Length: 273
Image (cartoon, rainbow, N blue to C red; front, side, top):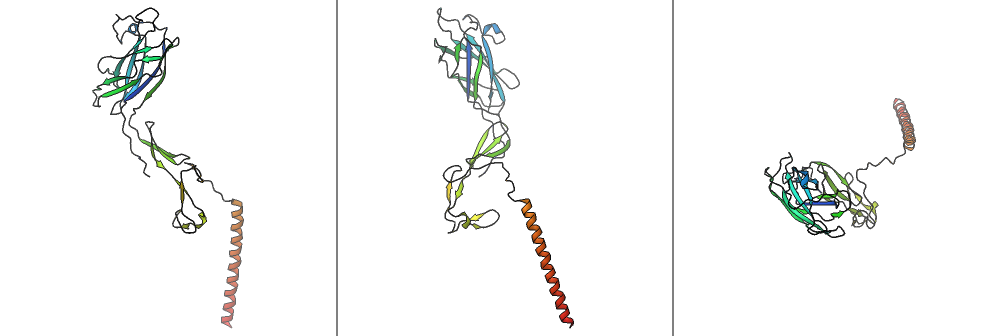
């Protein structure tokens, strides 16, 4: 099993999800009004989201939301979405794009306008992006405007920060950009007679006829136990009992030494006689 301890490359954003709670009480903008991002009177709400280019730059897209005047009195208004891409340094990329128009039912459920595509030529050395915009879950109601959720499949490059092992044996490598990569899964083997294994070197054992053949399972399944990653096993030895044993061994050693010394003295006397 090999864990990638090097850097992981950036992944350009190709899908961006934006779930909005739109306020039906916001001002409506007449169709004769020309949209201007510098003029707040030409749009109803605004928000932004981060997108990553192929080099991993965290660029931003400003979204401007215009509640259109209904074509007929009492009809549910639609919302036009304009998008203005910006480089990480705040420089605008091109001009604002008329991205899509969101339609709603009389109960405020999104009925049209999603998905949409945002095409951006960043002009910073990165590849051009075609970002699929998803507004699924967006609602229109008598509520405060809010961004309910953002999803983004892009990310910046990242460095290796560590690895972990879960209870089911999965080995995950973590990186500074928040990404994780699976390095594989550790399996556990059971034996009918573990005592019959033949110790080889270190903590390695070899299968014997006495041990039987291994039964390999995923940790936590069958007769296999689970794994605890990052744990340090505590000593299972009793200090007091070991000290008692050490004293006994020392006394036995001293007694044996005395016997040997006595035998040596007797041998010398016999030689002298």
